[in-house]
Image 1 (cartoon, rainbow over the protein chains, first blue to last red):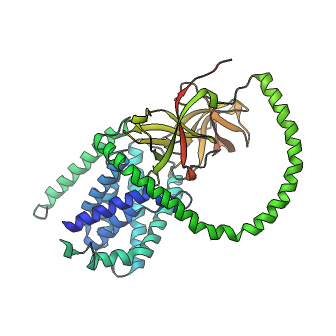
Image 2 (image 1 turned 90 degrees about the vertical axis):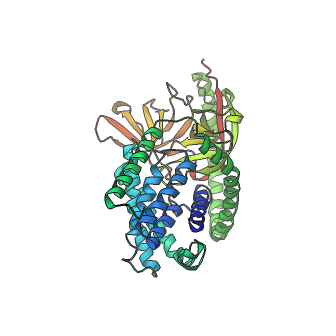
Image 3 (image 1 turned 135 degrees about the vertical axis):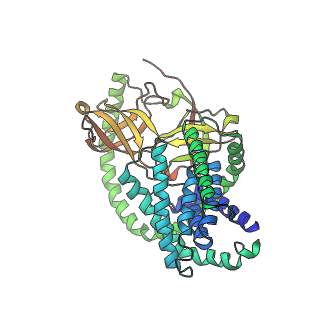
Length: 167
Length: 279
């Protein structure tokens, strides 16, 4: 239970960072999506069920803070957590390169879900602009973040605040 | 959850998705006020966001200073050269400027909007946390008489409009957001059109539905049209960068370079009232 609370506190901290300081490291208007990154990594290390569930809860928090379309982030992050979970047990979890590759794939998938949901609520973004301007750059940026910080997250998952010992 | 059969799990998952889709559908209709929970969360987080924003800006400036210094001496030599060129041009422009003032008086063309507006200054405390939307949070809200649909500007030009307010914050939809549409016209050719955002993060705009017989040229100024819009008339938006045919072929569309640098917004002005002076 405590581990879940730590995870959600991390999500809240990242939401705050994303709406403030991360804008200063945006490249061509694109910043890394740290919430999506931790949701994917949580899925990767914990499996599809917990990945999707905590992705959903983290997404609801994002929806609450943003005050916009309710459910947009919840559904997207749930998909991201589930996709990340598909790697659990199938991929080698000690490699940051594999984790980064998975983050790239899952971000791409989750951003496609986000795009489809936008179409559903009537927000028009040209497909090519969405792909080249947001989805692909964001996928690579998230992969880079995982490449740099996966070790830290993995250590926390094994023996830190996010480890099973915190239950 | 683990004790449930696969069928029940699928039904539960389906229900969850339906509930969220319903929430998505209802929240898609423009809600002018935040829900009490969201409002409280935003009011609570706003001062924290402001502090992180200031610290982030300072750190960003500090980190980027050495990189800026490298090119400084080269820039200085170029600037010296440019300075002498500009001095000679300045004399020319003074003459043109005086001519311009005379012509404006003749046309009774009122471009000075500031005297017609009452504004409230606000600091930007946060931005949308994703990459798709372009919105900012400002530190003024209902308690400071900020209301939905108020226009937000900087001295450089149009920023957007207030879409939702809480007690002490307001969310501003930037004109770069794909949900934004601004009734506008090209100042030189008087061609009407709608300026739309492309994606939130990128600071680019497109002007659509321009009549083909009023095609603007590169470098023309785009301003708000005012008619039937929440935006007062005459606020500068940007300059035309490129013109091309729309896919349907009936109208033209133009890429517009905004005057406002949306990645460096720190303070904005909310137009609380606007008095249209007619000649």
